[in-house]
Image 1 (cartoon, rainbow, N blue to C red):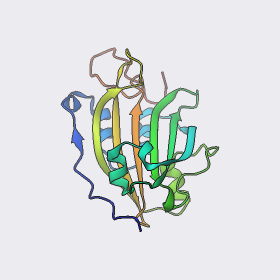
Image 2 (cartoon, rainbow, N blue to C red):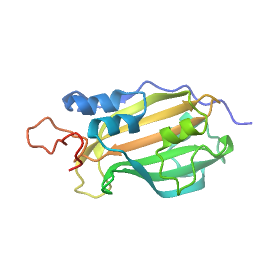
Image 3 (cartoon, rainbow, N blue to C red):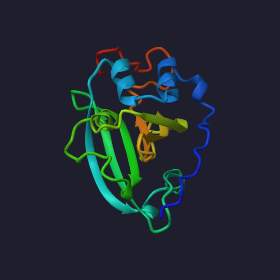
Length: 192
């Protein structure tokens, strides 16, 4: 039997968060659909591109992820690496998604281009609650000179009590991290 998942902690906030532009703070603080907010803010319809989706040992996930998902030692999880993309193919966000393998097939097939939250609704999980774990600034990718970007971590709790962990990093060219004029702030409806 899987132990009960740990209580979810309050979100970690980082010192740079108050300096972010209002639309970025709204995106990071929201406990609703990130995809719908991004589509509204950018004026774009997005699709998901799955880079990998596989069953892994729980140890392949960071300890904090294992804890919020209630994964026991020796447990299995489904790990998905994906990107939300604009119609022109530009990457809007880079995502790590995980859930206990025993919870069933919450993640759609890797060929499905529908973003996760929208797919969960289609799979009859209309009642979803997102609990924020952390948000702030990180690096857009793992390169040494990667630009700073906004990120958000949360757990989706579905009506069947299952949990899905999500970590999103947002393209700083589309989701600004500065209020400085000319800092590449996007024009709604036009992906730069």
